[in-house]
Length: 139
Image (cartoon, rainbow, N blue to C red):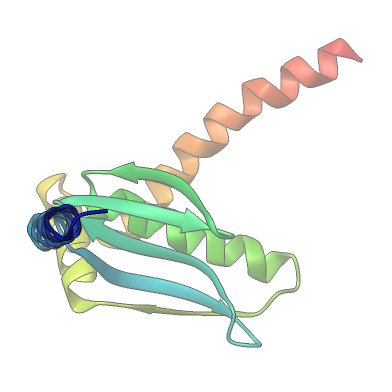
């Protein structure tokens, strides 16, 4: 193998590394905004934002995404209530930015954040009810 071949190979590696670093630096950053932890301190759910989109993760999996901070915040609170109902005590910590964004969205609809949460709970229950009726009719 010639000396020039090694020099060219090394130059390609350096160039590829530089390009990878530039792409990583220009990618939208992931910002953590809320987390739900169980009694042992394990992360069970969380909300992050990337590129203006809010993402909700539950039990180590992506549960969904939305442009609405109020929606993902309400869903995280609902998940916390579900864990509590199943005997798993949880603690929720969230950023002021998430709370403020959610409150602004709810206020734009003429609701408080608690009213928004209640409305979302009602909508989810209405969607679940037909499924339960369908399941019962199959038996």
